[in-house]
Image (cartoon, rainbow, N blue to C red; front, side, top):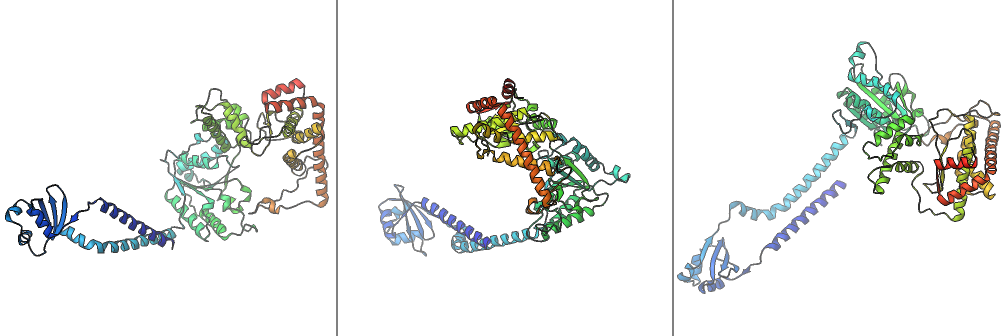
Length: 609
């Protein structure tokens, strides 16, 4: 029905166009006056006519003053005979130039037949277009089960990625070099009886470069790269996903040696029979077909299947057994040296100012993934361009860190004097508690300028990458989290809603100390709540409680004790350094922002540390 309406609309548009063209051309022709034959005779006798053109029975008359007229003669008789019969003298007729034009056969027949043929041709064209649309729809129906993979060929220099374009992940590159070597020269592995893994699973947090690393393997090996997201397999029709899997593997085998890359494989590779959210027939059929295709490879087939996920815990065990995705490569968040290299790569095409120190930026971005760092450099370039600067400066990069972490400045969010004072004391409480507590990260910036959803913030960043954290560090962090809460109590004797987010984070940390890290003396080395069911609606939907009511009461008491002790320590620090708290709050009210070096000088001056 939709195709038919489109064709009717097209036909109407064509008719309207033809009508417009006809009216346009018709309007350009001059309107010629028609005279009777007797009037023509009179004008000839009076010597006014200079030329007569004869076309069948039509007469085109041109007067001596260049005026054009038209008339008609008798069909059977010649013009001269007709004029003589009407009384034109021989002398008058000899002064008129007479030209006879016989129309060609083609023009004659076209003029005769076109009024009848044109509607017929329009109808034929309409039905032909309709048939083409129907045929195209039928072809699409037949190709519905074909693979929609995007292919990057080795000679595509624009999209090809090499290992040098991927900073960091040294261990992952070393692991994947075996795959590259196999694709380049498989014979030496086959001759010795070695079996290269059929499947390679790339695991890591979002933004760590899993897709980029897979492209780099194909680029280094110089083989075609078939890229498809797992969600593109699954359709509303059962069997389409399995058909696309078969077609994808068939294409890759024809182009061997090659690499198949399935992004976000957890979309189809989740546990089968998981109950809620796990019974989708189409998804399970697609997964089964992937398993069958992985088992169907011959030893000499140089096709490597790579997949990426940030949720390896939800994958079906059948995917991970030896002979399928038996090689697992973990891509961690980059450390400080890797972050510096990633920043260098992403800033290659951006003009940097002389004052830019990428090492300092790397120090201020712990926990950033490669995608976060790319976004940071891009945001800095946008800020520089917005300020009509030709180069990206250090402050552009530093401001972009805060923008990526917290969001843009909310300049329209104007605080009253009272709210500004409360916010200044709140952030000053966080900063001074962090300066006084042991094993805390140094404060890099304090600000009461709203960013994103935060009215203000205290930015603490570690001086080096950490992998292990002590109990002392966590207890100090608890006290720092409650520093704003304690500061409001010390300065005003009353609380506001500004500490709600701090309380949530502090409570989560205290509960993790008790139930996850075994850092409670009363609970001891026990972990609770670790058995969670990861289903379609989320892991918290059916998290399993694996402890009794007695333990639950004890856990709650321990969490409360840790929170109360942290608040007590924070209040003691701020009460002892009340003069420093007042001075820092006033400075924030005045300047709105205090940077790292300025705060370090302030701490030494008031003897807080």
